[in-house]
Length: 267
Ligand SMILES: Nc1nc2c(ncn2[C@@H]2O[C@H](COP(=O)(O)OP(=O)(O)O[C@H]3O[C@H](CO)[C@@H](O)[C@H](O)[C@@H]3O)[C@@H](O)[C@H]2O)c(=O)[nH]1
Ligand SMILES: [Mg+2]
Image 1: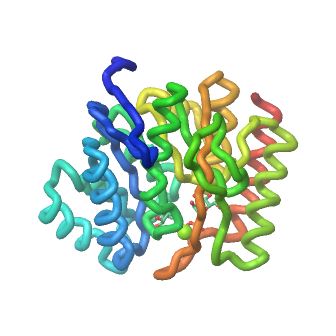
Image 2 (image 1 turned 30 degrees about the vertical axis):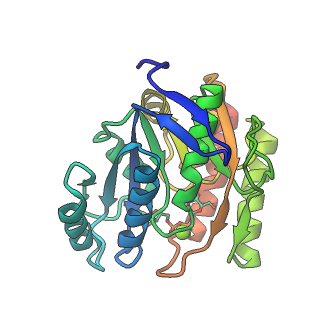
């Protein structure tokens, strides 16, 4: 990959004036996201097109009973099969393997992973890209737990979480505190899953990652830091979904604690 393939300048509003020749692949894992998918795809297309960026969205649907796949097929007709790439699986096989599966079909230089339920708003993607370019980073992650971009970026705003109850906030804070204390990777939001990776970097890290549930994100980041990859953070606001339900259960919490322990003993 040619690191000098894109030239970026900033206008007075801090927006991109780009001749960015890179392509951005988004992996969207979906399980029962029929109502959310058309809007998130529309928002993504808008952001990419407004910034003149080449893009594709790889939808990994796990045989959602609500008919998400039919919606994805309709979207592929509207936007084109080069833009909406549907790569379904036969059953609900989990978030971690959904990313692994989606990645095998990505044709971009960079891969963005995010949720399909608007908890991750596409409006933050230009800031991820700007931070990546400014510092030539391997990974940029959204953070709910830092108020400033790291390394610094002039126009980033504080992040946060909206719409979660106290139990879910405590689980998230506790999970981050546990991993940060035990593993010390120097990244503030280890469990979040709104991230941008260089494609070969994601392939490398994913090939080493063993966990498959929600703990997957934390393991990926800890391994990335242990391998010496550079990571930047952009504050994001995480807004809980309006349509549908979270798939986080008690078994995921136990799986997370086990994952921290296993990384502690192996890395
Ligand atoms: N294909 C597939 N997709 C799935 C599966 N489980 C969940 N998804 C999809 O993955 C995304 C996130 O799932 P949610 O169920 O909405 O997750 P959440 O509870 O809101 O958790 C979010 O925040 C956590 C951090 O606090 C993150 O760890 C997690 O990855 C996610 O971003 C959604 O697009 C959902 O449809 C699965 O087994 N298979
Ligand atoms: Mg969600």
